[in-house]
Each structure stands twice: as structure tokens, then as C-alpha cells.
Length: 276
Image (cartoon, rainbow, N blue to C red; front, side, top):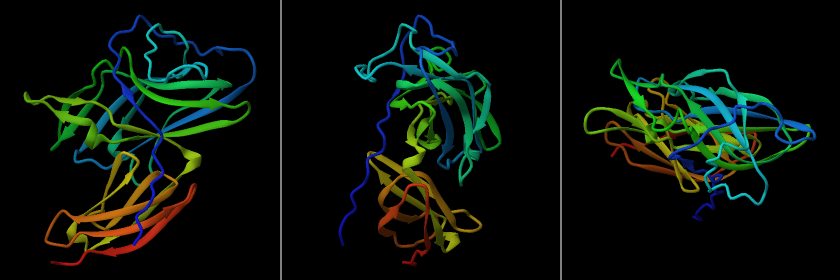
């Protein structure tokens, strides 16, 4: 059986900036001319926590030109445009199974942009066994979480992206019992993505379902009551779905070459894990 050819995930690098002399909160157009708009949403992969609460206090984008290298630090505070200043409190673990949070929906000057930046507040925590622990996100309030994602705002058009936050891969407990986050986030252009869903049985197997998109491993867990699972915002292309039981003794299973089409949901039906 032939192996699939994966469509690479849009390049994304979360930069933890060292120091910064300032940042611009201006919402005025950085250049003259016509405008378009941008919509930024957030989703999350399921995680093994009761809750992961993140406080987003500002969303910014960096206006540059096509000669800019998005991997270079923008440490002089220039070029940043604030597109949302309303504080948003998000429990990342509620952003699964088709649920999302809108972080920004704003008008921008048309032009070429190099980065997205999330400025986070201090009200971040993780809940484990009903106990809330402070969640430290280094440099998040000062320099923000920078996502290298070059894009163009066309006049009169809306550019819509989704930030796929992976809480499980992002949060780590230190040796002294503190929780820290180094965010793992994919940036996905909504117009080029689709969804994938199905049911894994028997339900008591508590199936873990995973696939790869580019360099990323994406994981979903079958619902403990219905066996349903779902992947949101997958770049259009072909995927192999891998199934492993988290309880009991069942054989691993693979579905090869499942096609995801932009703007559509692919239903793979019911997958039955065989007992060993």
C-alpha cells in the first residue's frame, strides 16, 4: 500500500525574545492606502489537565516588507500594530471538538506582514486534580509570544487564521513542582484547512489517535462516553491515522491515506480495535 505524501504545516517558530526597548500600541495605519481585515481564532488539542487558563491582553502584527527576514528579531519596537486590546481569558481545554475562541477581528492597512504576537498577562494557571497552580510563561508580558508567519493583507479582503495551541506539549513541571509553559503553536490559514472525525471502539479501549502534518505530531483522544474523536484545522492533504489503546489489551491499528479537503469535514466512520 502506498505511503501518503503530507502537505507541510505552515512554518511557525515561537520566538522567546530576550529584551526589548519598547513596543508600539498604535492602531493607526502604518502606511497609507487601502485596508483589509484579519481574524485570528484559537483552538487546542486535548490535554491531561483539568484546565489551562491563559490571559491574552493584546494581539499585535508586524508590518514589514518582503525583503524582511521573519526569523530576525524586531527589537526596536517599530512596525508593530495592535489589532486587539480586549483582555481575553481562555481555558485552552475548552477549545476542542469544534470549539474556538476569537482573539482578534480587526481592520488593518493592506500590505505585507511578518509576525503575529500575543501579549499575555499574569493571570495564567493550570488546574491539576482540582488544584490551581500558577503557570509561568517567560517574557510573555514584555516581549510576547512571537509567531513567525508572513502573510499579506489584500485590500477589501479578510485574512483568517487559526492558532492551534498544544497544551500537552507546551506545559512542563519543573523539579520544584512549578509549572512553566513554552508554547507549541501551529498557525493555520483557514481557507486551506479541513477537519477529520470518526469513532473508535470499543469505548473502554480509550483510544489515542495520532497523525503527522509536516514535522508536527497531532493527537486526539476518543471520548470516554461516545468514542468520538476529531481533528480540527488540518492542512488539506492525505493523512495516516494511527490508533492505540490506552486501556486494556488491543492491537494498534492504522488507516492509510485519508484525504482532508479544505473547508470540509472528512468522516472516517467507526474504527474497531481488535483485542489481542
